[in-house]
Image (cartoon, rainbow, N blue to C red):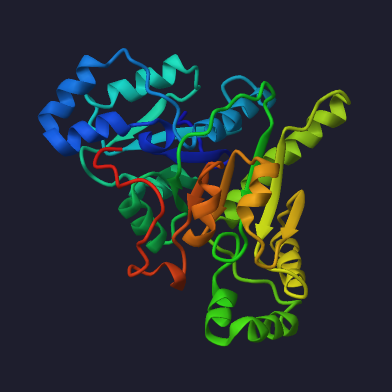
Length: 323
């Protein structure tokens, strides 16, 4: 029988999100493809260092200890612009780091995101801005990793995930109201529409799948009172009262939940991240990520009007030619 993906949380990850490919990418850009091939072959047995999404992916995969052998809750699939030959180093690095990832798609110099629907993916992470923007434009849930890899020193297996609201979990309709009518117009609009849930944004379904993992954890705790809950989800938004109510009602209307919420009203999100220490944070606005990416694995979700092609000033990193 075929391996079924429909009931699993499936994540697509580019090698540039999972590992630090700075040196290899520099060879490709400065010396060309043949030198890049020679470099990867020469360093085939040199494990790549952790990338921005490494800790998030490792901890997410660790939740498969809640499932029966051979029937994992979480599936991570590599989606790469490498060809199979140059991708060997990526797969060997995965093995060296002990990550239970066995599936990969290598597309020589081409965008792999178009296979997301066929693989039931709830999320695609990459360092390639073009791939991510094109995926989001097609209605696919994707994000561009920013910043340097975080050193994962925690001995526990906790997984802390943080989301912005507008343009990430929800659509950007209220953000457009804010841009057109200012803060008072936005607050008035949100108060009038407080009982009307937003249309879902690009990562609503990903949150729903994370909630299913949390439900499995609760089932495990019911069987074993000593079981320690590992997954913790936070909402971190620039909204504050009275606009907070519509966000809360929207989550409830969609049937999804978060463990805690920060309604900051314009307070710098990076200050919260320094205390919260999420293993990944999703936001649609580059301005918020400039600060968070310094210390927090951050992901830009280029969704909505604020992220039209003329808004290309991203804070860190260059596109990877091979990811």
